[in-house]
Length: 334
Image (cartoon, rainbow, N blue to C red; front, top):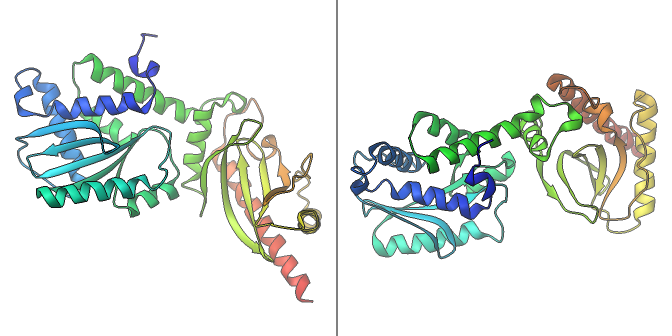
């Protein structure tokens, strides 16, 4: 394949540089240099403004830069609007950074009579629930799919521009590979795409990377229920489907064994023999009490994902967990 600078320079700083470069092309004096790239840049500015329901007929003044007060990208438009962009690939917000950036920018706007536009630009993948929290902080989201649609409508004969677009389309194909690759060949991007699909099918889920001494995994958790004083829920660990218990601060072994006893009774009742005891138990605030192997819920190694069957499987285990809690609560009342 032809070398692509953005597949080599993969850090967010490279992406920051591209979008700052694109914004700068929107300045009117650049029209005579490359009219198509200028028009594309102006359309990009209008896309950013439209997220806050702002429409302007003419863009007469554009300035843009990086790393002002740690804000990834900033742009001043028509001496009237200040756009700040938090630019993310696969990392997520941390340390209340969005609140800090918004306050810094809002203070500047108040002193300089500008209107503030806050954008969270995401080319990677992030859970729906975490993106909703971003919106609640006053940042409007432009994601990879929206960017791809924009680039499809704005064709430009420029190597930098086209290499970024090619790299973004390649990322989209990689994330969607969960639909076409045999399950044993799934890459981390495939799992990201799969979890993004589950975002549309499972209620109350969240997911992110979970570090641990053995290397970590991409985890998705959902279907939280209360059993006694503890949370019980389901978790996918980039392979196994796990029955978890959380909130255990003491008496780990006795709590874990009691909950496994509840699971065991229901396993026999529903004949779900694929739910097994884990190879070894941990002792922590969160513990795995039962597992279903990847092959038994997701599909065999050489198979292509059957989306409908997988959702039926996951709904079955949701019902099983609900039945465990219900049956245990009934017995404890007797």
